[in-house]
Length: 330
Image (cartoon, rainbow, N blue to C red; front, side, top):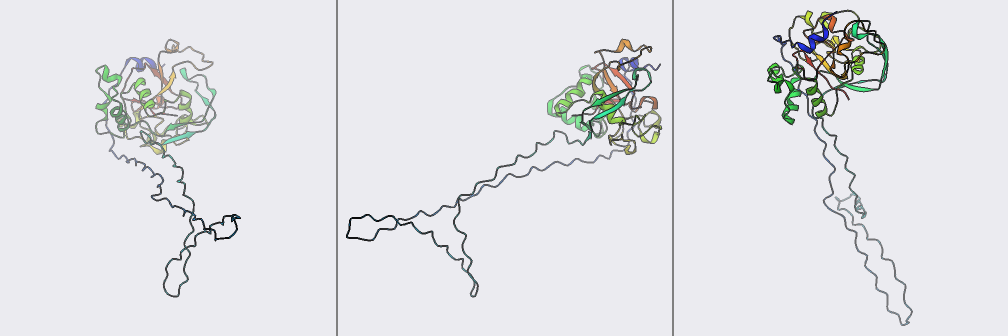
């Protein structure tokens, strides 16, 4: 049995990163729409003038006579043209109701809509057993892993200090140098959760993550059932470090979610617990419970066996590694 849990719980792998050339598209900022323009003048209706009653020798009162509407004044025209009538007086215009502008996102990130429905979760391998049907509600998930520049914006806005920094360990800043659009690493589950809450999102559940990665046809890898080293940043790819998110569009999931295999493994919201009907027999029972959080997807240091859509591992919420990152859902 692969030494899955001891490796993730007790060992922090630090490997020099060889980054691909940077070529990040800049995200455009939305321009807020102007509100409605208030009228600068209010048209005043003329005040009716009572018409004096003609003199009469009798004391019989004369009923009041209605004042005629004012005659419109023709607009001056050139010789030979028919004068256009002036628009008659109208009531004071009512300003239109202002439409509120949409609230801009703190980080402009494309998200993929995953439909509600059932899929098969798990496999016949160790803690992935047994395969079982799971139904999830509709949700959205980030198309890409959270990047260094996005995490830097969160830190600048909040003054957040990561668990690795608090422990005096090498921080995310070291691994982010010159790599703004690479996935952020050296972030713990606590750090990932804090970022998602700041972005008004959340971490995906383990079931949501797996459905977004494999779809409903039970595929082994996001792109299909056959291993293809050209569709993933894994150990066999030879890059030995993170790459710009979305570098392998042909390796996207059935829904178009990028890097669900390789680049970095990803935190999910769930505690590491056995699946319903788990048969045991692999020594993993000691790790189950509300002690460790689930990690999915495999990273740049993982071999092809560990970047499958069903691969699951776990670690403590304070762990920060250089091949573990995350993405958000809502």
